[in-house]
Length: 151
Image (spheres, rainbow, N blue to C red):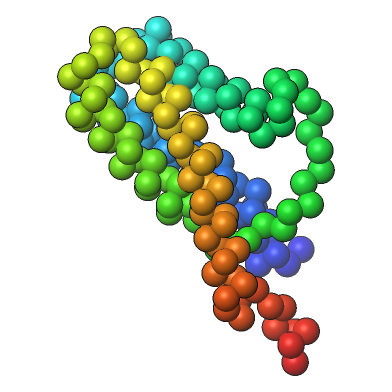
């Protein structure tokens, strides 16, 4: 086993999940700080908002609610694995939402599904932007070439 190859495999497999995890935990922490410490009901509401966000995105992407996943042959662009745009951008929006909108204009219980939905939906939309920007970066630089083939 080549440790670098295994590390690259692990990072590829974990990349999107880690960014999403940071987004959900960061958004949840902001809710706890600004709105209230959640009980089980509020935690389930946050999860419900997140699940609803995935459902809406799935319906948009696949044009149906239930579908067998197709093999995705889109190559992973390594520069999009860090998710700076999708995670940090989303946390900024979650903070602004919690700080200026949710805390002042909605009942506390409604904040949890709203922020769960926002975090899920915006994270995935920003992933699309991040992937596009990464592909543009790779095409504009030598980073997209296999160095062994260019010799």
